[in-house]
Length: 455
Image (tube, rainbow, N blue to C red):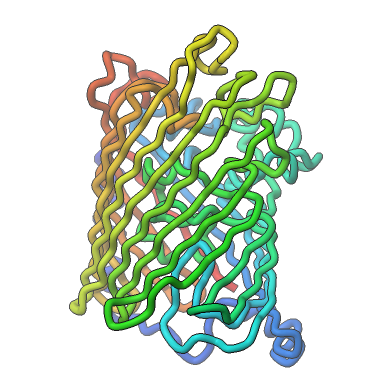
């Protein structure tokens, strides 16, 4: 039996089994899964006396595509340009969180909150530790990417992929403060998620995302930044909640700056009064080139130049939760890396005389929650990387990329969630340059699943 037929039958069988058992499954509601293990070890009183919250999750993944030989699938990155990139079984990540939440009506780089405005200042922090394959893109230049435990892969990404090396990273480490000024504002200082894009990274709880695999838009956007961010409530009333954010950071995934200028990021976030409707616009802009003589911070910053080469990235997303179990979301993305075309402005991929490149994309998600434990979802996406920029290191092929993904999330209980999916990707307008199957195919079918265990 062919691989395609086998995986199709497995998909149908798994769907039928999950759909049947989901109807009988009831999620325990008495105690949340997040923090369960830490509460048992340390006791509620110990954590509550300091206002500390601790929790974690483990994410295990399994994937296979129809283009790989057994030899190719044994190495990492054989799913590229689909993310996650590895086939077979892997530890996606083991992640621990500890923090002191602030009493606030605005969550920085996430959302404004309904309810009254707190009248007292509040101070807290957030710290995270991650280990696994996701630790590789989660590590930051000038910080955990340089740790010895992340060698040799940190210095040789090809070797890391071939060895399927796990990495240790600290995705977020920052101080938080809330001030009862105007309608409420908050300050974040340190290393935190950029808050740019519909799939806001890093994920403090992966399972609200409908799929295991990531959109092309997610791959193109900045994950983490280091600096400071002001978050301010601008309006609160019958017309909804509106928050604005502005921050100054070193750049993309950058603790130790690779040039002599900073980047600016910001956002406008609107929510309806009942929090069922959302509209987000976010951006980051600034010089992202590597100055000559500095360590080239690839794959995030691909340009070397003695002059400033501005990069910008913009996202606009809208989502709606309907009353009958349906929900929908849509996102558009635009980005551009400037290049002045001079001989000493060099792309480490294409060489000297880099003259700039842009990319854009759009995607839509439709979900239906059939029961408290079961959600079905479909995603359709298109991403134009005709300049070969925006999806590196997953690919530098000049092409349009398209994908349709079908999947479901089944919560076995409050601790364990299971997300199988089937995804079909294909190229268009690629001038016969192939991106899938290590440069052997213009399309790909991927069957994958992950399991998330919360504690």
